[in-house]
Image (spheres, rainbow, N blue to C red):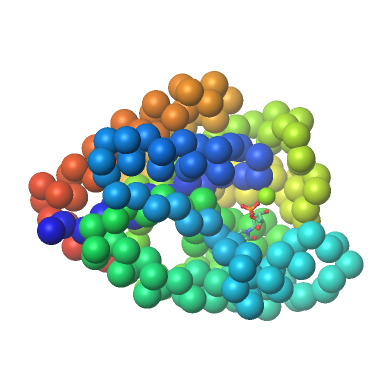
Length: 209
Ligand code: TMP
Ligand code: MG
């Protein structure tokens, strides 16, 4: 049996990642493809609860380096889960990954290489979708502003950094997230289906960041 695909949805806040990952899972399952959804930060674990408190309470102080490492630890906690699902043939669709980790911290002023280092060794995605939207538009979407980082300057900085990842790496696909939910879904489903099939055919190994 071949492994599942490891697929990430990235983007600034309020681009529709959760909506799209839920729809993608539903459609893949209709095609009889085993697929599960994850999201980072995973707010249920010990690190996740601290992260959630930090995001929702702007008076709760954790220094920039420490919160960065907590976000990374929150991914490492799930290493065994991710590997076991993939090797059991289940594809995983993830809302945010190491790239959000790097982009949000670099946007605050931390050094890029320092930010990337704790991500090294985590599973390498097969495909990353960048749900791309103008930060001026995403901030008009409902709910914007409720958590730390949901301000225009931060979102603009993060958007620029995520686009740089997308332009350098060929396993990234930039998707225009200002399109309708159905149009975006169709693009995500097509490319996800392709990568899941490709992995079955060429039996490519799971590598590391
Ligand atoms: P969420 O809105 O997708 O739940 O993510 C919460 C916030 O945390 C969002 O503004 C992005 C930010 N974030 C980081 O700063 N570092 C990370 O590693 C991750 C996964 C998210
Ligand atoms: Mg958010």
